[in-house]
Length: 526
Image (spheres, rainbow, N blue to C red):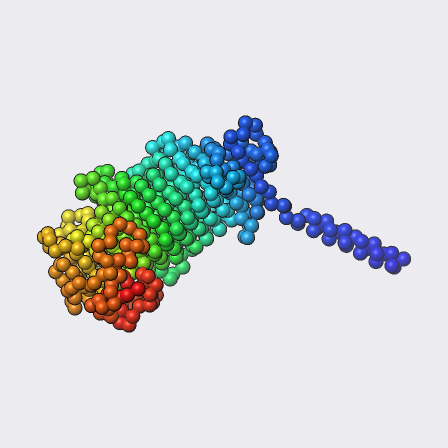
């Protein structure tokens, strides 16, 4: 009897365990297929695919699920799937079919977005062609990421071809529209977002505009900022013919913007003093801490009609950010200049180093960006900004003011403690009137060619570039502006105390920096 009771208990226990295990068996990942050129709707199988985006939007996806659109086909409307993946098992939205066929295309036709993800995590979107034309009013996007409640995490957007997105191009309202837009609102934020290898062209207003928080209470870098987005990487993208800004990160900690190419941005740029004022730059950050902007190429950013534009620089050290690094970039033919430096009345730190600027409108331009009272250089200035080991090449390199006439008349005091060291400033021709190049009280150990020297311990002479006749864009051009081994700039620099910023050990080309450092963006030789 006792044995029977024990056996019964054992069987009951095993049965209970079996039921419990069955209840916790994860669902098998599914693949749903979409072919918008099929005449009859199906169940989402390969043999009977869904035929509309609306039908796909009715489904809820889970961990490891795939939602695939057939290559060579076109869908209209918005793809707005539901559901979340899981760590290591993301939802994949992409393409299927003949690998030689064109990417599947979604024409949003003036809707909010071609692809919209709202409060979703662990999602990959790849290999789609997206357009959103047909409505020049309001905000429209290729991809719209939204985080309204909590954290939207582990999102990847890659190999998307986004073009012809129409919408509001105004300075005040149009920025959250364009190619790829991230919006964190009402306390939402993002974590671990990768935007990589996408092609964006002919969009209004922004190429990639990522807003990681609506909080404006940014602390100093190194202090806790729980409202900000983290782990944002924008890498290897191409943005061309953009009405406004090329690539921007806001509301982030430690965002990495690298190896992107931006051409012909700020096409809608308009006079700084006009009611239609419209200002944009190639790549920059705002309301952000510890942003790294590196290995990018920005060219042909426009300034505005008739020379009465706004910004138009390749890069921008704006206000309300701390410990921003702009390094190892190339900048070509940007009408507003290489980098915009915003005078502000709040403490911040930024470093601009080992960059190459060729035929930009200025080495840098200064502009008042944020001030609560009068334009007093004692409080509104460029304190904490450091430019060192850059190479500037142009027919008439200069430093120019932008914006308020009072700032233009008294620009030097507003430089504050800005440091300008170990740079090469190379005028391609001595012809023409002298250009303003007052680099402040902390301008030291720079080389000037074909122009008057400025600052203390300045050098004058030919830096002996390997090939100073090279023009165009790309790394091949940059190679021409290395200096020969016999260059006078070799080991002619002074060590720079980078403060909060890690001191780099290699130049633009990855060559080890000598001690003491040479001048310019590259050490001598190859």
